[in-house]
Image 1 (tube, rainbow over the protein chains, first blue to last red):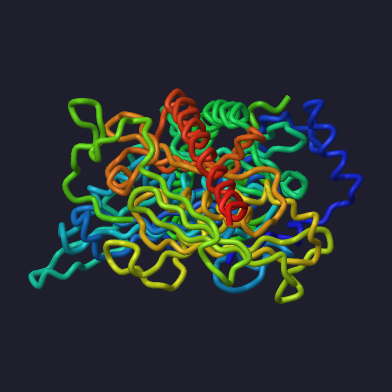
Image 2: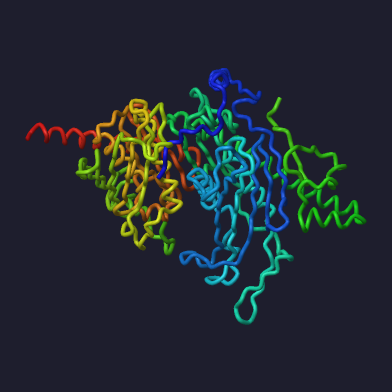
Length: 337
Length: 244
């Protein structure tokens, strides 16, 4: 059963709540952002050594880790020659004082299903290319979203993480033996996961009848309604989810979609840039220091050790940040002034 | 839900839909309230082959007590599909889909229920989909809103809902299961028409900005028609009482 939540996600002083609610009317936010501005975004692609694709995303203080695993499975009967996508999310108890251990709650299920729909409906992954033995064996793409620190707007952080992780995903080599069994060689990849299109969500919160992009958790404890809009790189609306206790008007819905289309495309560009620039860095590192081959293997084949003191990126001039570490690339919000 | 198989034609040469409706035409609608004796309020709503029963209990003491709020009534909502409601038998255990829909349906009703009048209580909404042929969440919202009114719970407005879809490139109102399965988009919308407020908005599928605008306006037009039937249904019950 779905129950009206009575515990706020984040208890903030009434004075602060009132301030947040009143200053947005003047176009100002507590952390100095513009109404349509995302928080600083950092992505560490290929964060996990044992996943086929992964990314650690930091959006402000929100941290989300997304892992993509490819496993051999059976296709759905109604799509025998297509791979299968399964999206799950875990709101682990360490991520927030209000998260409890146990099976996923409605918020977690909603998040995973909204992300799932955004990539499924846009055919973001070319599932036709994921058949191994058509009708019998296909690749199952498991996308697991792991929320590590809840700083607000888990939806967009998860969507960014999913996009980045899918962009880094490599399809392992699979061979069919004489008994029609699939033998997987996870150490060897046959290439990147085939993607048709890039999708990202943009979440807008409504506070005092003003729409704000990427609400942090203080803003989330003030706002009553959120609208998540998934957009594609080619400018289409690929999914909508209204959530929260309150309502929106028709004009607000349209305005939100317009903002989302603009911001979403910027976001997709930025994610692409962050993922690709990091891939180039890894390549360069490999060329530069052939002697230090052990550390290079760690950053490519095996991934990057968490919190490793010595990092190949340290002298590459890239900005370093707090939180979980690794080979990390970050860009300041473009629209920041 | 449902298979892909061979895609049937969704829009015929004459511009009509596979079941003979015009693009902006609703399915045949039936509504009835007070259909259950035990519940404080109840409603039965039918959109074509989609049939839903909704029941409301409360405001009553919130159980377990820790869920209660000293400021307002809490809403509890369960959307559930009967095992025989679908083509293949559906397991009665709540699926992830039903958990999500229970949430969005509750959130579609929250804005209109005057919960502040009943602190420390819960208002429980139980929805059973008896027969599913597309548009079950919107039919559920429409039925639940009637059941709340039937229970005499003060509300700012009724909520009515309908889905707009895109079938063979055409925006169509009140999609059924075939149009949902083989269409390009499904956008359920719920609104409180007198308040001018949208209380549920989802989109599953891909639309351009213009299609979204047009679709939203088409949905709100359909909602206006459904809202009228809701009000008549409520009035009729009291006319009958008067007549007795």
